[in-house]
Image (cartoon, rainbow, N blue to C red; front, side):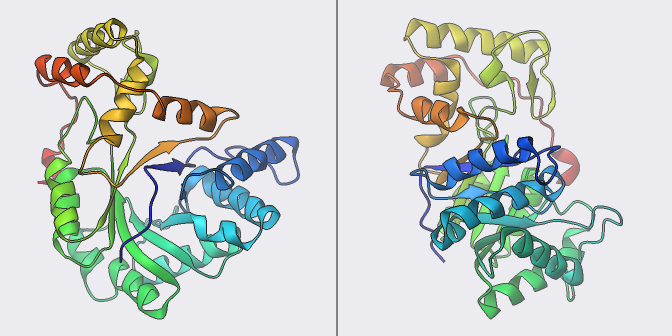
Length: 305
C-alpha cells in the first residue's frame, strides 16, 4: 500500500493534555485540531494513549465540525493496555475500537503497532499476537494499511524485516545528531513501505539550542553533545538560518524519508512549522555540517540487538 503522504505529518501527542470535556481548555485544543485538519498537510498523527486518549477525543470533535473529509486525514496507533501491559490480539482490537469511537470514524487509512515493549518480538508476531490482529483489520478493510512505530533501531529492523507492514515510524534516530535509523529506512523503502521520520528536533536541543538543561531523546544532553550543537549553531548563524530550520530540513531533504512527523499542540505552532519548512537552506551549509564530524549521540540501542 502506497500512502499518499505530504512532506510534513502533524503530530498530536500533546493535544488536549489535561483538558476536561466541555472546558475552555478543550475548546482551545479543538481549535488547534481544526487548524491542523484544515491545513495543507496530509495527515495528523495520533495514538490511543496520547494525552490519555484526549488527543483522539479532541481530533474527533474537530472532525465532527469540519465534516467527513477530515476523517480520512487522521492516522493512529494501537497501544498496550495501560494497566496490565497486555498487547495481544484482543488488546489490539479493543485499542482500535477505542480509537475509532473517540474519533467518530469507522476506519483508518493507517494504523501503527505502537511501542511494543511489554511483549517480545516473538509474542507480537506469533499466533494470537498483536500483529495478527493488525493483519485482520487490514484484511477486513477497517484499515487501509498497517505500520510499526517505535524507536530502538535493532527492534525496528526486525519488524520491518518481516515484510508484513506498509509503513514504519522511528523517532529521534534520524536527525543531525543521530542517523542510526538510516539502514532501517533504506530497507523499508526497498520493500515499498512508507517511511515516517519523527522528532527531527531530537525532542529538545535542536529547537532550544545548546543551553543548560537541554535534552535529546527525552534525556539530558551530554556536555559533549551540547558542545557539538554549539558548533552547529555557529554554522547556522554564519549562513543566516536558524538551528531548528536546519534540523527540520535535514529530514525534509533526505531521500530516505517520505514524511517528517513534528508535534503541534499549541496555538500558532503549525504556522511556525510552515515558516521553518519554507526557509531556504544554503547548499554549502550541508558541507559544513558534514565537516563537523559525527555528533556524540547519547542513544544506545544495544540492549535491543
